[in-house]
Image 1 (cartoon, rainbow, N blue to C red):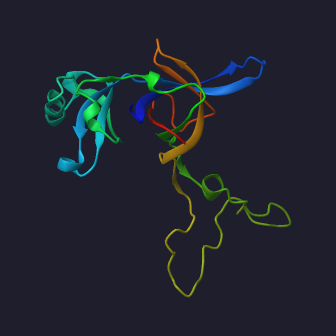
Image 2: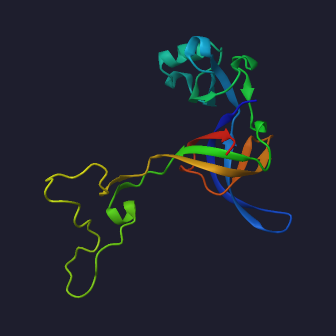
Image 3: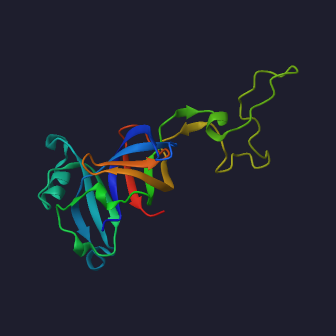
Length: 207
């Protein structure tokens, strides 16, 4: 069985349990994915399968990509990712992987790219407390302030400063599968996941 699948974030909603409790969930279109390539230890040094997800116009694909997909006789897909597995021989090129590889109640790990926030100051980016706003203080409320020693005459690496915020690879573990809709390829997981609506997600089995 595949260890993961690719999906696309739809948005958030809520479902109700048998006891009437409201549970916030994220709706994900998970698959169907196609097996594009198989890798093994003898040839590549590791065991994995390459999955493609979401159709795209063929005229938008580059020639190297078209050549890569031609080996599996599948039209180019928008997303392409690898999943490490134990035995790639169990899969065939072009095989379809669907959302039914998951079970209700199991735990999954979801990887996505967080929303981009653009340029942000220290308070928003690093949760700085800010300066005093009373007793004759000048307007330095949201400034960074002192950033280190004077003897070194330089800024040390890793210093928290204003800068670009967001668009980071975020890994959320231990998310519970609340519901699976095999007819519409929908996966509902408890809580929020990284990324904006329409962004690609990697869903892995296990915590």
